[in-house]
Each structure stands twice: as C-alpha cells, then as structure tokens.
Amino acid sequence: MIWPFRKKKHSHPTFPVGDYRLDSTISGLKGLTEFTSKEYELIPREFATAQNFNAPTVHFLNREWKLCLGVIDGRLYKIAPYIEFKDKTEANAVAMETLAYCMKELGKPAKRQKRFSIGIPPMETLCFRQENLR
Image (cartoon, rainbow, N blue to C red; front, top):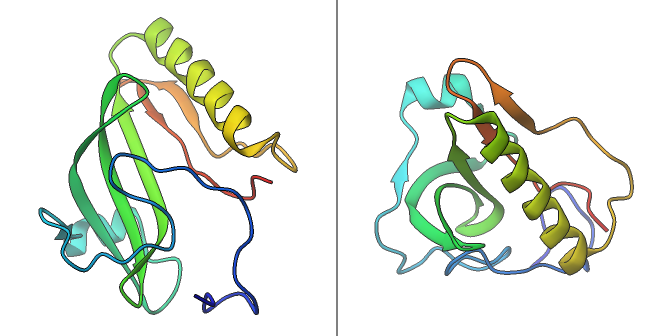
C-alpha cells in the first residue's frame, strides 16, 4: 500500500503488537471503538482522512497493554500500546525493557525523540510512540 503521505511503500521493519501489524486492514477486527469528540480533542487526527480507535487490550512483552490505533483508508498506520502506572520505578523498568525490545526488532532510532514520558504525576503514565525508527 502506498501511504497518503509517502510516495512509496514503507520498507522499515515492523513487528506485531497482539493481532495488529502496521499496514494491515482493520476489516473484521472486533471491539474497535472510534474516538469520541473529547478523545479527538486530546489526541487530534494527524491527517485529515485519519481515524483513531480504541482497541481491546493486548498481551505484549508479558503484560496487558491498552491500545489505540490510527487508521487511514481502513489500514493501520499507527499502533499505540500504553500502560498506566502508579509506581515510577516500575514505569521506568518497563520503559527500558520496551525500548530494548524495539531496538532489537527495529534497530537503533535514527534520532532520539522526546516523545514518550515516564512517571508524570498524578497517574504515572508511560506512553510510547513508534516513529522514525530505522
């Protein structure tokens, strides 16, 4: 598939998160709920034709993760698993474990981005975005 914001198919390595893989279709997937208007206010569409969905939790890296999906023309362009922590030490350990897994599967990032946060009070939330990894 040629993405609407790229001239050719993506060639970067990917890995599945639960039953989800980048560029796969959402046709037949159960339990997807499109974002509400309030959720779109918090996490806006990145592209005019994009849709964001909440998906059922997935088992990934020996933990249960909540999951948001980004979809364009019925295909996944973003898989965003996340976990909410109350303990900063646990959040940091999971962050390092997840980063190590991503680097093993995808290689080192072309550049580091400060696009994830660890231990933000009051919820101690950990979020990762897979972007620009090569």
